[in-house]
Image 1: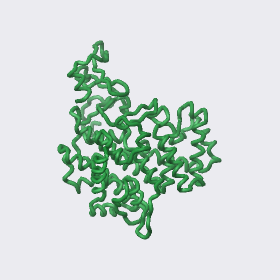
Image 2: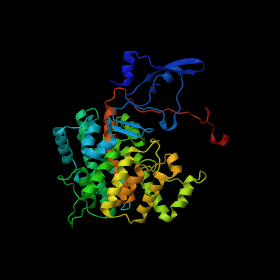
Image 3: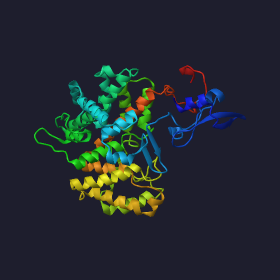
Image 4: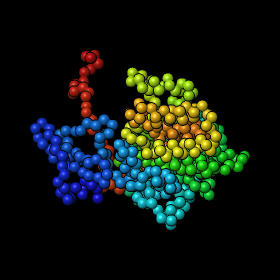
Length: 439
């Protein structure tokens, strides 16, 4: 039962009032487990003929969810109630996946069964190999991901009926298990190397690294430090409440679209530089700065409100305190740099010096412009050997879990209806058609 349904059945008295043209409207005030109360405006238009106006929906709860909770002021991120740092430190990615999908951490038997299911579905249909050769060699990997993931619905007809819980679950397992394979294939295609098939004796993160960096002519051993870093990156990016791409998946799903199409829509939204492309933008900025000697110049520009330059990877739209994911990524970043011996890389030197300044400079501390997860993940992924155009692809692998969990929750929500935002119309009033010779 949803909070709104529970409210109406119990006749809860918590209300907000809104006066429009002298008429008072009583609106239910809904309370979640954590976070701010929510004014239920479902009946406002019917009762008053008035819409609310909220560009970007930043003050609007579009759904009820039990999956992820964020407190940006306190720097808190919880998956199903568990702090993100505990999960990133102690859980495997598939444990976290199970938690997000089903609501609880698995016991040993549940985990083994779940892992076996995931392992059985890591390969993609062999005919899908031909999809990649249809793209230009220099195609952006995210463009390939949008197309290939959407095309999965053409291959797996037995898991596109969203009314069937078993088919929904099968589609979920297939997408989560195949996403690293598709992403690795996109990478291999871009560098002109043969595809590497999944290896069932490796875990999720190690298997992905092998599919990306192994070649047929040499043995490839996955470095456990790098595999651990990849696992943490996947866990930290797995879900982030009702962000733009998650909302896109929910909106697409509200129409009854098949799950493969919904996730493809999420990937397309994630591609935007203001969303999933932020870590790529942060690394591009570091390359623009180029050397430690030039940092003071860019710091001055960042502090000048009349200069359009902004330091990418610092501060966060949601977190007004330190991004809780950044603390883990900072540790992971330094572990990876130590393991691969890249501390002499001039770009990484720029990053480390910027990090030092942002954590000590009074201007950055006062404005809470701390390094965020995009700053550290961009550096880490570069050190792992990924080109910048692959950064958002890795984000998509991880976020697929959150998208799937949110999509499944939406499908099962009795209050869910097809998404239909309204508007404040400011165009021309009604006018009459004139023949061309009279215009």
